[in-house]
Length: 309
Image 1 (tube, rainbow, N blue to C red):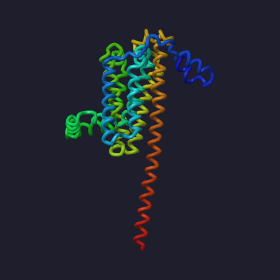
Image 2: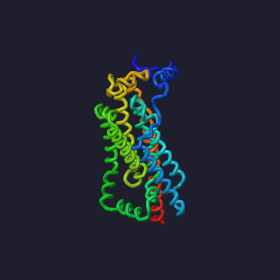
Image 3: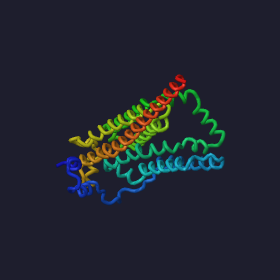
Image 4: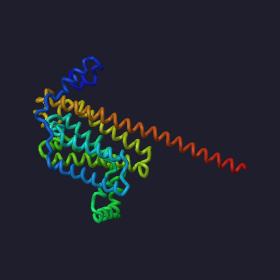
């Protein structure tokens, strides 16, 4: 019986914890540590310092953001550090399922938290006043506004996010990320960048261009295509990514079992989170529709009473 058959079809409680422990245990982490690569740490530390400097300047002017926004940014920043520099980063080159975990942290934890933190204003405040006004002027310019309007359109954001996810999981491209730090960095930048765009369109652009009905469709269709990719990885009869043929067995699982676990991580936890978000939006959509109907009905009754009088 294959690993995926045991995990999915075996009744809960009949040896499942022991099975999971046997297959998911990582042994010792002697070969994995915090690596502190310069090309990751320098941008992260610079962003964190600029953000704190901006908050300090805003506090002196009495216009600091709310504590919840600061907490969201700090949590998102911490999630980036965890995904890109902790032992997860080193283990992701040895185990596919750890690589999937790293990607889910980037796209489903760090990205929405950073969007909710709204860090652009504090980062602008960190700049000298002259530079701040110059950057703000560029951001308000017509070409930049038109470009951003086009890129942040719901369909564009959805397509870019989906394209990044599917293209980078093509076997040739994914294997290339494990052989080249530059290609690996490009993968992470595209995942994080398109995820930030995806969540900004949903969370910040909602009231203007993405009503509840479109938002439900936006999230639900994302749930479907990510779940399909996860299912393909899970139920494949052969491993897709050759670099893990040698590294996965060192952790007492085959490359196929490693891929199946990674597929489950993409399929079930990520799919469940997106489904919950879609259901919350659906409930809000129904409540909003009911409220608008009540307002309309009340207005009609008021007009009718006035005309009758």
